[in-house]
Image 1 (cartoon, helix red, strand yellow):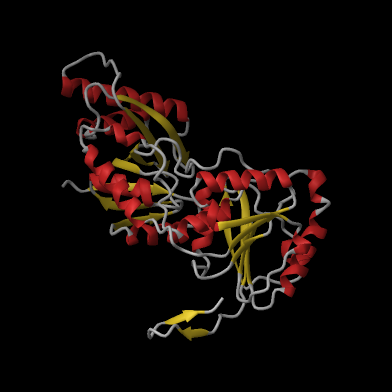
Image 2: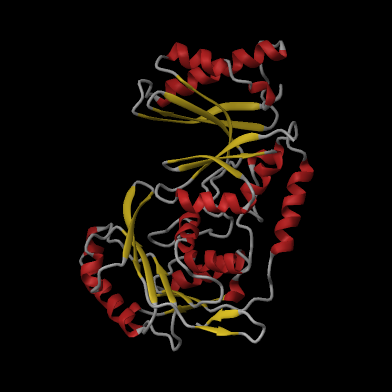
Length: 391
């Protein structure tokens, strides 16, 4: 099978999480850069990466990269790429997105237009046609310029991978599914440990955690652009990948995952989303204020996305809200708390300085992932010679 380079974009600051995911799928990493990880795979890897990766935004098939400081260079270098390997004669192709950072060429619309002309020129000479009907499968092209280096890829995913298909309605300050999954993976939480989100909104953190616990692949119930690329990805690869995903699902697990929110309608939405994701039976959702946050067991985890106060009228309530959160957390003996927020006085009102914090861009918003780490639970022997964590 032919090896190709595949590019997986991700949230800035979470490249290491995605790199580990790709390696766990069995693929070799060729480059890690800001906001993306490049790896080596075959046609089957396109299917498996789309279905199994929890933290990638999409999967691009890299066609090539080159330097271009003028539009003439962009045209000639784009035309020199082997487009006929991937786009058939009836393929629908266009430069869907162009982004430019610190490069001489910076107008997205001009970059898109010149690339389209270059690809038409290349494919016209290969297929001996002057006009393309473009009535076949879609091959959306994405191009990224960084310091005059142009990287070109064909988007295999289509709709961004954070759209798992379960979240129809978002809460007031939604966190994307890919970001939620990555943040959970940055913590030591696993399916044997308690997880509570006291500001659960539409339920993204609890749902992503439950899907991980049950080994439900995030892309099992959605479609991808590359499913139509029968010219070089056999359909059987998609069927085999979904079979692999179905075989992994664990229906028999017991977990303690809870989501609270003060808004009754939001809790109703969270329950509906969890049902759609196939994990409704694994999560306990409840209408509850953060001041009433409590749990009888020790060594639990709080992973949450509290309000940021993006609207001015909400900002006045933040000191009191974070203070209540901090007071509730102090009563949870031996627990760990992880929160993502853009509120710059979060630690002050929470009443504790984080053991670690990590800067993460949630879209264009600069946020911090604060980590308040509790003690590790003692291990006990389960009678089979295995040490099992209590809690």
